[in-house]
Length: 580
Image (cartoon, rainbow, N blue to C red; front, side, top):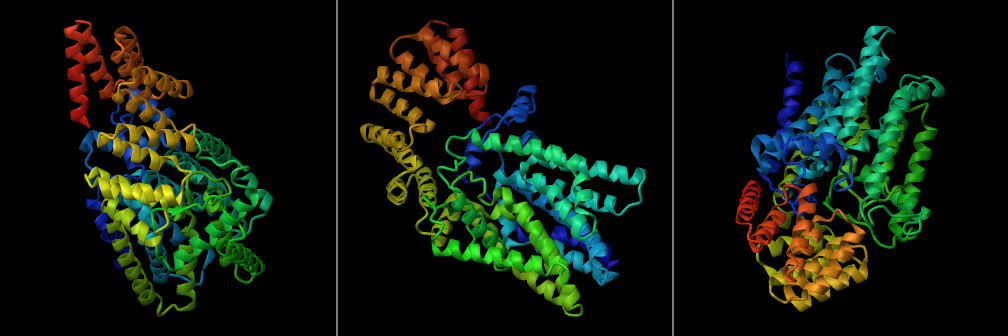
């Protein structure tokens, strides 16, 4: 009877460990760009579904994740508690699925663990995965819905495949393989990081089922095709973001190897000792591969790989877990570098699953009598750490003040803390953080832009314009800096120069709705009302839920004497503002 309650106990343990996340809000760490400033996902109309199916907003292609968020928005509106609760529930579901996977894997690979011991070993593995502090970023961050949603399908795909691999040839086996492939594709539609599944399955076939390598690879062709397609899609998604995807010229081969080695040792080390976790571990630019921490990491990673491989016959579990970990983490290890992070806790969500099997299996083989007690004590300690880490995600200031405690020299953390303080009206403190971010990393345009916005709010328009110009000097293709420069020039009364700046912004990106809306205001300021109407109608053709465009049209039609149309757009703007 007790064994039947194990899945329910896992759900309870996950919700207890992540309880602080249920009362957290949105954070100014992509949540603002993805949810607060973006209306594309807020609805289930054909227009919204088309946007979800085609967008690379933020970089990843994740239509299923957007759809899950849209369903919640339809039910609960913009209440962050609902999104957090669903994230925790999805993670709990993935943890339960992992329990059944671990039970099956132990039955195949570790026959020494049998009967009730196998149930409790699988329970320990699932607990190690489910309540580990490295999971907090994926679960407590609404933006990472894609992690927990894709994770559920990833584990289900593994589970169905393992059952298929050990089933007799026939209809049941075909159904299980079809279910595995379907779950795999659904996971890819949530987040492309699951594209490593075929590699993990090859490792399973070769080192656990002892199948020939050629047969293992041939059997994965149905999985390799969608993996390749979504891998290409993921690459283009990241490439669509200006400066996100680093070229080899910007981040050389040796730098990538050093970063990948550091990632492998960092994730393995933090899995065993989850301390000093942070939402941002900033990538040093340029990265010096001969810096001691990278040299040590390359030596350790090489030695660990060589040792695990040399002992693969005596201790196949160790080599299998290490090889699977390296293959799963490879796409996000820095070999293909996108974004400002050196490493990230969320990248362990799938990659550290093999370690959960390894730790629990070793514990129940080497110390079978003490294993349940040791597993309970370890899980309780991890859950307490997770509870504390999840509490840091309550709000932006708490989270990134902690990030600064971990790394006081993080320019990104200073910038984000500045934004949080600015939103609370603590402008002097915010300005200090922006200036510290600029001092630490003078080649980043974002702190200049944020400082410019702060100065603009204070009416220091000339100083704001100087900061926006500096953001463009640092990075000429920084779109927000150019759009904000145009808006600041317009506020200063330089409508003609503002028009020139905003037209350049639109030449670079014709889809920039903010630049086009500001351009319309510049045209209105010059008395060119018909031209302004044309620009605003072009905005609404692709962004019909943009309140600023409706407000601009209300102004324009009022000036043209079209009171009816002005009132219509004013009502639309008010309705959209209320919906936000």
